[in-house]
Image 1 (cartoon, one colour):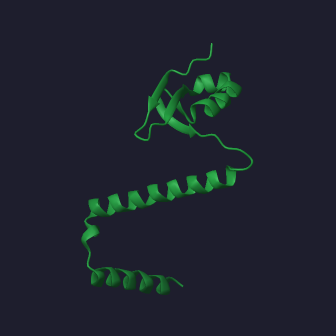
Image 2: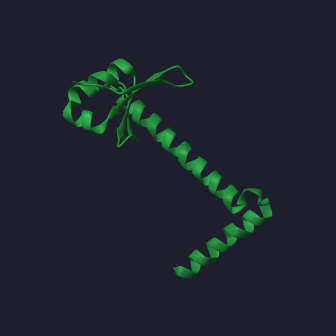
Length: 112
């Protein structure tokens, strides 16, 4: 029996089905059909999120991949911002930033 064990709605109102990786492995065709019906499926392993499947097509896959690239970039920027707050570098003045950049450039020239 194919059983997606959870169905959650996000703030945007889009439903997300949760699917155990074991169920996905046993019934990949049904899992792909569920993506079309639910809009997206969160695949879990041992109850922990591991992957998100979203619908795509020959017409939209390039745009979909570009959108996922933008999401990955936003996550990277957020991680950098969080790290700068944790390191206390989020309050550097422009003069301090310029000094740091100059030091890094000097060190790179010395390595060449």
